[in-house]
Amino acid sequence: MTYYDGKDLARSFRVVRRNTLIAAEEIPEDQYGFKPAATVRSVAELLAHIAVSGRAMYDTHAVEHLQTFVGIDFPARLRLRAEQERQLTTKPVLLAALREDGERWARFLEGVSEAVLSEIVTYPPTMDPPSKCRFELLLAAKEHEMHHRAQLMVYQRLLGLVPHLTREREARMGR
Image 1 (cartoon, rainbow, N blue to C red):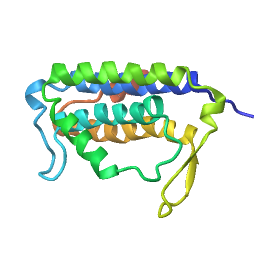
Image 2: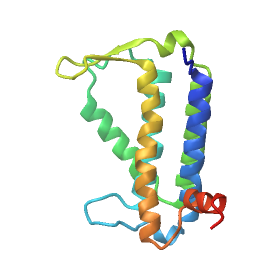
Image 3: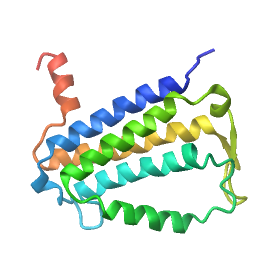
Image 4: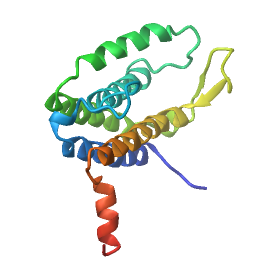
């Protein structure tokens, strides 16, 4: 049996967040308004979304410790998160939010017990599947960030930058 606990979740999340922070640091602040297309988030908006999404996960699992999503007013939560994202506007503020919120989430993950990881969280009747274990929900925070960091790396390429993970891989390959 493979065993993956809260400490493993925290460690792997910290790796993902560290890589997000490096990408965010390497993009010049004067490029934070860059959008590859009119209908997508700018660099700053994407970073704000990553930071605030982590806060939402923390609130849901660490503060509220929801056992069910039945009856949750998701539109109200999305409006709150959108307002929080709009408050993160400058590179220093974004980097601080990513660092602080990321570390708070990782510290929470470190302390999550096997019993909590195995809890079942239910969804409204219209959702499929009707429930998931908390482990899957906690892992989703990292998956969500990796999805958006991939977008950020495309932005870097469009700005003429080589993402640090690419540089590191090329260095290992002797290029």
